Image (cartoon, rainbow, N blue to C red):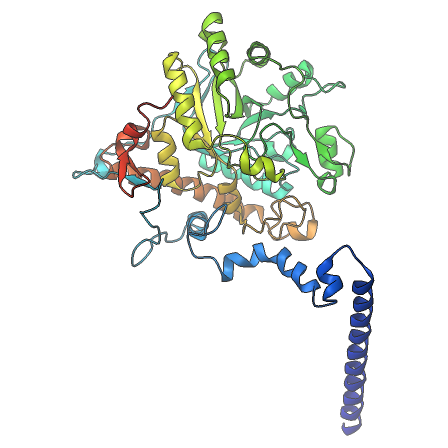
Length: 493
């Protein structure tokens, strides 16, 4: 026994010397390599230790949320917002103690005006369903106010799509396919689907990259596909097409999209067929006539001149030529890869574009004909209620449902290294994303959004969330005092 102990100690001592020696050699190698290179001044001037600067810079965004940021400080979503979504998705207690951490002083803060005589539980009613595309052969009646925005198979993983599909079916909301085409995993859960037609027309494109009527007809034949959405632009990158890095283009995704495996999938920045509002209305009518289903478009609004022209063209052709819905994406949207110059500085945020679009539609008496869908950082009941008050008929969210799936805001969406398995095609990382468990979380999150909407509505003295109006909200202005939302927007043009 003593011999064994002596041999073990001798081995451990030798191993320790080996490790120390190897470590010393590595340090010497790194020192020489850093001294000789001239691409990075920090590494050259401070060999070896200068490397920690780049390591800390790379990991800083990830660890900041745990060690440095307060509950309401982070971007794009703060800890308080994420925490509410996590609790809702897990169906656990969402109450908080000892007062809110939300400051009511900053300009732009939303405050709902409670009624002295709130709506009693027995007087409350469920929000009524709304029919989109009443003049279509197959109109779509949607009961859920809150739905899942476009995330393509490719941008997110197979188990993520499966969980969203099954979860959407469970809670009765729709799921937008995103621009990557219709995959078997979208259909798997039997959820209502909105098929998005991006600028590359993945899944419905011919050899020239234009719209294929034959493929479009096949997509429409699926009973799960309820509507079609032409994507003109999205919040992350207005004026630029989708970007899917080659490392995320697997054989399965390549087959569905009709592109080479392992190569970057970069969509055009616009539709080849569209160069005017007349072209857009022609495409809407073509798709609607061929499929018999409601057709609309998604856009980030900036300049409103083209929208005025679109409404004028609809007036000339008749309201039957109008899109059945418009999805307004906020300039602060975005789940995937995008140039920072576009992500940060291009397009209008929803607080400006949504009331603008609604006013234009009302002026042309088209608000009832064209349903309005709002998108962009609307992940809590208060933000959803605010969008309803501004005139939205429906709200969609991508990142809210990503949090429901378990997203930790690691900011790795474009690198195929997502630690939660949501935006990666690495099989090892996907193993932690259990479809059955995440299905329930998706449904729970949607349920608690609607429950929270009801709480706000009843506090304001109305029977359901669709009755929330501008008169029920005040916004803090620059002087620290609030102004009624209807007053704020009364002269907004």
